[in-house]
Length: 431
Image (cartoon, rainbow, N blue to C red; front, side, top):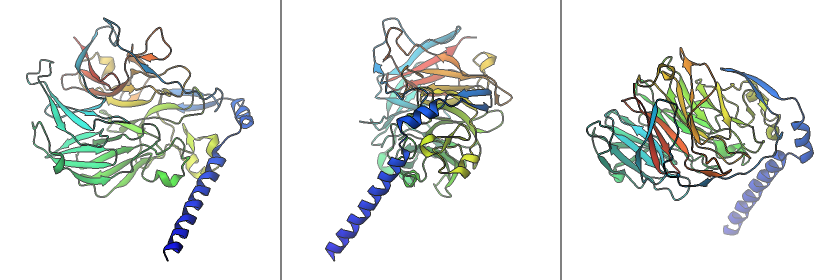
């Protein structure tokens, strides 16, 4: 009986490996095919801010280019537009990837990364609102790659890579006990590159939580059975019940925020790799409930990925075109609307996006914060540089930092998490 069971297991393993091998073969595009595709006319799509012209896949070679972290030169800092001041709010973290601002103004910073994650949340408090942090302590530890955080009522929610947890919490509390955490949603963990992040946001009524979950792969190369409940934004009740897929086909959604004018949910999405220098642009977009955004079968609407051509024509046909392209391989992660009144009027209700920078381009792109202007709840122009200077001028690979999360304080400042630089920057404007 034991031998028979072992034989059956071996047969299943061989079958699974055979299916995987066949899929990998199918997804490989020959050099001749790549050449033919690259010579076809460019693709043109109509986005919310105008026409976007995209090159054909393989118009350029897919390149791996890693950044190298360097120390800021003496007297040098990130650069903001004229009239703005950049200061260092806090440093000395271990990969401060995300910041959540509590209703009482406390700052909670998730320190986590892909490998050797600190797995903790640090609390920062400016007791007298003078712009200086007086309290800094470990708020919660023994976490598994945490990112998103929320306070709703008497609970503190944390999105670890493997699940959504809730902890009893009282306003002003400076530490939580790990043992009191309860997992209310189990999430699929692991993934391609940095798709371990799980962000969370609540709605205006504070009766739902939205969880962003990135894909396990670049373009489904491990089989779509590995992508169940992934490449989605998931909606659940505050106790984790009544789960549903709010939107799908989003390869790696991370930052989320509500449009302050019309109440739409917006997200920042990392698009696919290995199609060339300028494909596929990352994007920010409004998120339609029940909407499908193309991954992995197509991008920017119904432009089919050549590696999956013809596999899902029904899904390709209904794919939604994202609202705003924010550049190829920028790893745009952070996203926040500016709904305070301290910055000049052009920034009111516009969108800030933190671009971490990626590896799949011959020239570094990203490594900055961009601003997208909005009017009457709609984007009106292309992304504009807002916080730059992170790429060394005299090097093709050296960078001083990598912006991720962007958050607006109650006083109207913009906080920027530089996770690789272990720093949180504050951008202020003096009227």
